[in-house]
Each structure stands twice: as C-alpha cells, then as structure tokens.
Image (cartoon, rainbow, N blue to C red; front, side, top):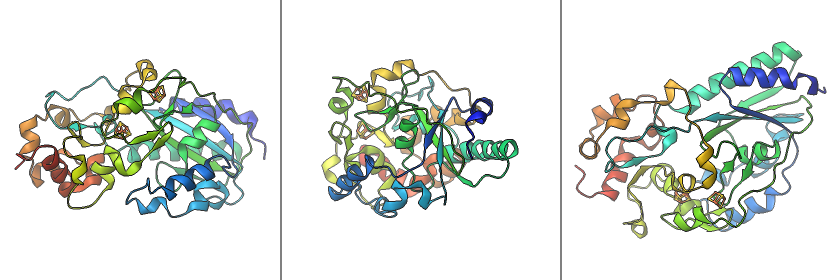
Length: 310
Ligand code: SF4
Ligand code: SF4
C-alpha cells in the first residue's frame, strides 16, 4: 500500500514523541553494505562480538526480518548534552549513558508511534527495532536522508552532529524514499587522528576489537588486553572521542529528556568510583546502560585504567 500521503502525519507524531528526525527509505537488499560487512568480518574487526557474524542475510535484507517489508522508517532520538562529570579526574562515561538505558525509553516511544500508524493507516505488518536485532540502522538512516556515515562510522546529521540514538520501524507500507544524503567529511581526518587506540584503521573502517567502547562494554574477558594499557584515555564505559572531535558536533543541541540524566552519576568523584562496591553499583545504576558491563566488568575497567582501585 502506498502510504506516502501519511508521511506528514507520521512525522508530526514522531516529533511529538520526542524523535527529532524521521526519514523513509525503501526496504531492499543493502547491496553496497554487503561487501563492506563481509570484509569487516573477514578482518576480524568484530573481535569477540560473535553475534555480528550471525544473521548475515538478515542484516542485509529487512524482508528476512519482516516478510513483505517495503519500507524502513528511521528515527533519531537526541542524547547530546552539555552536562559533564563533575570531577574531571573521574573515570569517563560515554554521554549516552548519563541517564536511563535508552532501550526502555526509545522503545516505548517507538511502539507508540507504530500504534499511531496502525490507527491511521489500518492493517500494517511491521516490527520496531532499537539496537535490538540485526538491523544496519546507520545504513537505513543514511538512505532515508538523515545524515551520512562519517569516517568514524557514526551517522552524522548536518544540523545535529552524531549524538543521537537510531531506531527504526520496518513495515510493509510503501513510502517515497527521502534520501540518501551526500558525505560531508571532506578532507577532515580528526576522528582518525585523535582515536586513543588507533581503532579507525582506515576512513570509514573501525576495527571494533580495538575500540574502547568494545573493550569496556562488549568484551567479557576477565582481563583487558595489555596492549591497551595506558591508551584508554581514562574511559571506563564507552568512548566519545571520535564524536567529541568531529566538527559537525558543534551543531548538536542538548536534549530535554529528564530520564537521560542521572545527576548522582555525574557527581561521582574519582574516589567514589575507585571505592565502588556492589551495593552502590546497584543503587546508583538502576536502569542504567552501565548495567550491560555488569559490576565485574566495571570493576575490571576501573582497575585497568587505575590499578589503585579497591
Ligand atoms: S569510540 Fe573511541 S576508541 Fe572507538 S573508534 Fe571512536 S575514538 Fe576510537
Ligand atoms: S571528525 Fe571529520 S572525518 Fe571524522 S567523522 Fe567527523 S567530519 Fe568526518
């Protein structure tokens, strides 16, 4: 069903729900991404994220996730903030983790948007995704004209930078496609030059196994690899360097979402982190993305960046 005439109503509802951008693309096999993904896996850039090796076809073809898929509706949810960790010496936490885990909030809003679309259009087959299934969210958002994939492999919106979450609805509705958008990285190489672990091994290629986000969150080993000793730039959970240095992020504006703020976490001093025990961890990090690394993982990261941690 051609649902292009409903686009404006969907856009308005998406904005009302807090998504600051919404774009439409045609669902189909991601031909350009297929060889890139294949090479990336062949070079073991996924490290121990074995889930990346699974569902190769599903990643590239949305009709394998939603039979009869015709469109991908991509949505951006802002998490840019001017809040900072109070103690400049405290182990650093990625901005996206300053408050409640985005999976809860963004999924709730996405499900609401999908209900709205069903009420508006009638019977719709589809599924909602927030970083929860093998969906190449950046590729779809870029096809939908919401930005381009930069040399740091993040989606960059020309008016907002890259501090946002990406969500999508894959549906059997047909829409005119909005994108894609041109690449505006130009001759810039700031993200490549400033990455603390040299994880951006070539423009547009991040070796996940060297990335601090992978090391501090995804890697479940008891110890972090010694080759990264002294290179972690004090990051204990995630890393924002390649986004912080990106000139396009000077356009980002702070979000207004209270649930993305946990003032207690930002007030935590270096000493508080070093003394962190399981009870405080549970209390402080209720519904936090840091839960993904588990207490053991956070302690491991803290010890790695500062061996004086208790
Ligand atoms: S997140 Fe940090 S470690 Fe990973 S590529 Fe970007 S700058 Fe490098
Ligand atoms: S820092 Fe420069 S090269 Fe890297 S993503 Fe941003 S604009 Fe592109």
